[in-house]
Length: 131
Image 1 (cartoon, helix red, strand yellow):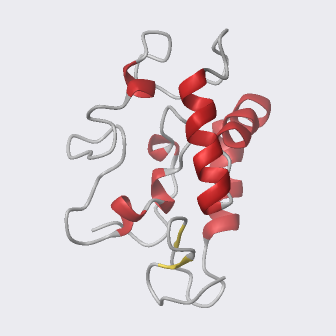
Image 2 (spheres, helix red, strand yellow):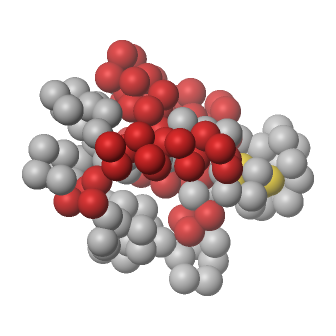
């Protein structure tokens, strides 16, 4: 099970997703350990992670940034979850990963209990409250 507020650089996926706020990472049953963990679920067949230019790591300095696949993913997340992978990657490029992780922790920590807000359900994974 994911620890409360487990925000860290190793949970930032190559696409710019913060795995710490992903429902697959936060759930107890069929838990995903994040894109770099051996028990990962999301990126087994991920074309972004498999890209030879990304080479399985968050790489916002790619010369083809943003690629078609990343644009499609970003559009889906902007529409459904009001979060942008491209903005995340741009923030990482501009301010580096540690500053990004700190801002993610501030943005996605539940004010009521200190748990983590699930981006896919937009509620705290610990207490169930919406931000």
